[in-house]
Amino acid sequence: MLTKRLGVASYYSVVIVVVYLILSKLTLVKGLKPLITDSPTVLVRGGDIDEEGLRKVHLSLEQLLGILRHKGYTNVSDLEIVVMEENGSISAIPKSDKRPLQPSDLYMSPSPAFIPIPLIMDGHIVHHNLKYLEKDEVWLYDQMKSYSLDRDQLHQVTLGTFNQKGFLEIDTNNPSDHRQGMYNYKPGDEN
Image (tube, rainbow, N blue to C red):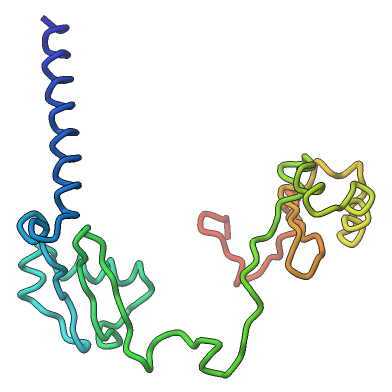
């Protein structure tokens, strides 16, 4: 009996996947896309909440405000447009005077984006990254000295990364390295 139900459930699962794949392919056909998908819905325009848009997408005001807070916006009037996209995600574009300052606003040209390269992870050296950078363990241990660490203390390094300036940045697992004070309060600490 149970085996028969599993077979039926598997059959329906396969059917759902096939229907999904067919519909996703049909959305690429220009003439069929409007029949299958909904167009983006405006939720805020010019700082004013579009109540009709909220009703259309079945989103409460509280949900919208929560989503906007998650995106870093606390004041709806700071937003030029908020849209629920075809895929259900929400895009928020701030008014020009409320958007984050860009380097081009100050006629600056920032250096290219750089991803720090891990050289030590959980007390273990990442040898292939050292090789990629054409560095060796002697260089690595010399860099550790600037953090008052020697090779015997490698196990204390949680993460060591090669930064854009060509130096090693280290985070250790030593809790005494973390500063105390009101700006470093951690919820749950005994006061």
